[in-house]
Image (tube, rainbow, N blue to C red):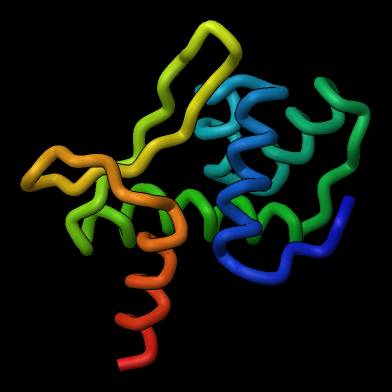
Length: 111
């Protein structure tokens, strides 16, 4: 598996794993390393490392804690061609570009 370099990569990796294993399965398995390790090994034949597990947990925190703290919601919408991951402004309901979301996060972290 390729090395994850930033939070944008972590989120993309989390989204790929959710597509392969199912959203609920991955979400539940992030509670502890052994359950994540078991899920990945049983479903994919892949022995996830503790570092990869921590990366997935960080991506989950990003999605469910950091994004809401800046007024952004994450949605996963099923389309005829597959799933589409979208970001919306909580107040206006407008879609927000993923790059803009991560740029805002980076700016806020640097303050």
